[in-house]
Every structure is written in C-alpha cells, then in structure tokens.
Image (tube, rainbow, N blue to C red; front, side):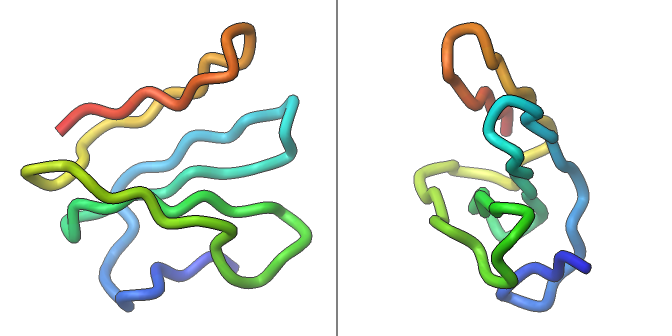
Length: 68
C-alpha cells in the first residue's frame, strides 16, 4: 500500500502504464513518484505553491502534468 512519506492523506494519483509507476500528491505541495516494485518513493518533486489537486501522465511525451 502506498502511504505518503509525510503521513498525510493522498488526495490524487496518476498511474503510468508505460513506466509501471504511480505519482501521488496531497496537501503537502509535493508529488511523490513510485515504482510499483519499491516500497518508498523513487523521487519527490517540489515546487508547487499550493496543494496539488490534479495529476495526469502523458505517456506519449514522457511528461507528468500537475495542477495546483
């Protein structure tokens, strides 16, 4: 089970089939990128000024799109 490293609620996620990975976000203004085979996030992405409310994976262009 995925659990935010900050122990706060995960409010949104995007699954990327091509990479077998999941991006999660919540009110802490960070995005966590997870491999389905590893228990901890691969990377944490910082930079949003507010809570991230939406995520989408554009697999054709290898992009993760986020909205705060």
